[in-house]
Length: 413
Image 1 (cartoon, helix red, strand yellow):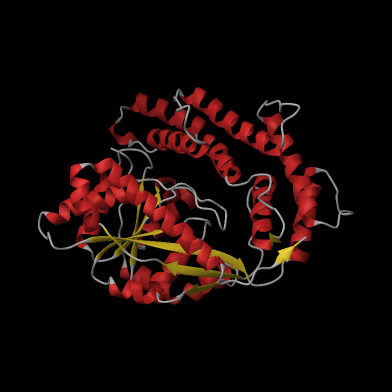
Image 2: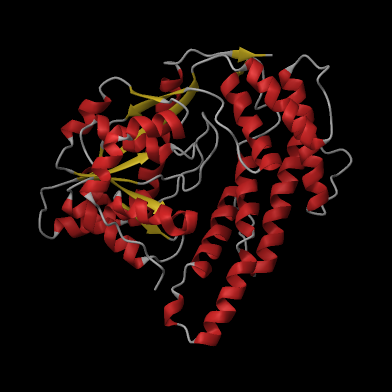
């Protein structure tokens, strides 16, 4: 059995979080403002008491806090599914708090039966809406949507099967939610300072260059060259920047697969490979050791410690997945430039800073009624799940584009 962390909803803890949420937005998120667009709150209110899974895009580490703020503005409480590893952060204190806020764990890609059972139970009960991030990874890009995993559709249909046994007239709904981050102020001066700090760490100095874009590109090329050396990869002499980035990602993942004795599908994308490898890591590391004899537990723990380092490699690949030569094509918005600078910060400093007060725009999409697909689903599950995943992806992307029109863009050189 996998090391499952169940939800332990605590009304006192949730109430305190609601009271102190201005501090969360003010201190932890640097004075962020969360604004729900249009009739988003009304759409959630219309589904009160229904069986609902909410599926936001996942572009930033603060998305869970934003979704908590959405629940407060809607006057509701949500349950959340979170990756198992986040429950171990801060020596387990993070997990203690998350569980009491209504979160529970899932080991991605594994047959996490306890997590699946909990998801079905919560959806069937319908007491609270359930939040699941269908990308499975933080994209770290404000206007890019990673290919969605099929888990949201699969788990929702599993719950609908259960619900139909007792309440055949009731539906389960999937509600797409688009989160769009934008900075309120012109960050040109601050970004110049940040790229100078990055250049200092890289041992280079391009302060004489007036174009922020060119300085970021030069720094990116130096980081890429450093990583190629670190991973013993020699770039082809005639390779352009895109080809070098692609070669580096594939090299990292294939090297990891060899160590873990994992076969990667030749036709799979880099993201497919990341998911396979991360699932392999999760499946091993979060296996419940209590059932193992002492010696086998010791060996298991030794291997776990060795392969945990691979998480950093996977995070590195994901950071590069949405970046390509031309991502910063003119006119360049400061949000896109920030995306690339944050990638460089994560590489050089280990983490990225929030650059200033942000406005987070939330668009709540039209609910998808799974009963509309249910008869077809019973006949042939796989294509229906794919159809629903595709519809959800298209709707989220469209919503992100529409939300983008609601902000004032700041352009940089």
